[in-house]
Picture 1 (spheres, rainbow, N blue to C red):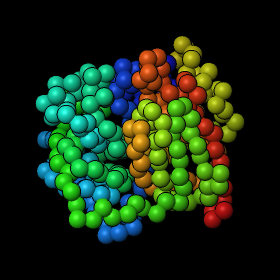
Picture 2 (cartoon, one colour):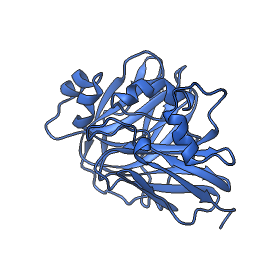
Picture 3 (cartoon, one colour):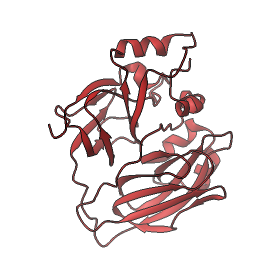
Picture 4 (cartoon, rainbow, N blue to C red):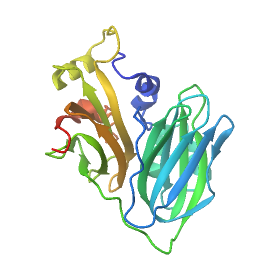
Length: 282
């Protein structure tokens, strides 16, 4: 059934077979690192992806500029020990084979003409920038190297911290309205994502789950507004992104599939959390 936002619906067949899935989000300011700011700029065009062949390790703000004609999803992953670019290239169209080959450090979804960004602590190694065009085209792969840097730097100063666990969210108790830097950490055993929506008044988690389980096609758009997104990140990873929210009720959701055997979306295993955002400066 199509209760998901357009982009999630387009990727649902991939989600259910275990591939990475991103969702829509609003443009946001770049989280500032505690030391000298370092950027990794990635440009997506109709001809492919342009990315520096090499950057240095440490805290890096990844900036994606989508200059193509279609929405694009960009995910960064570090090839695990012993994995070669050739192996990942061969496996990329088989999600069950590809996901175990990389450590996911985050990603964003970017509309044509839009810029998105997040901050990650890049360790030494070979990385893949995976692009998932919202078309029938296959995923794209662009490789780059991260070498040892003279200074690692320090992480961005976070306003809020969220933990993604198996299968739940540990949300902040007091979230004021306005623009804030969110630190997202994964102490669980599987990759997770943070998808934030603002439901219509009165719409509950129970109603959401009923819609997920229903075989009937709902009428009209989903009963929520997309607010922000970060992920996916593998177990043990942490990343940062900026979200701006007004006062109100929100939901945090993870749609990634269970890799322990069931293949069910994490939301079906309880990974949905309602939380409140207070007034400005509260």
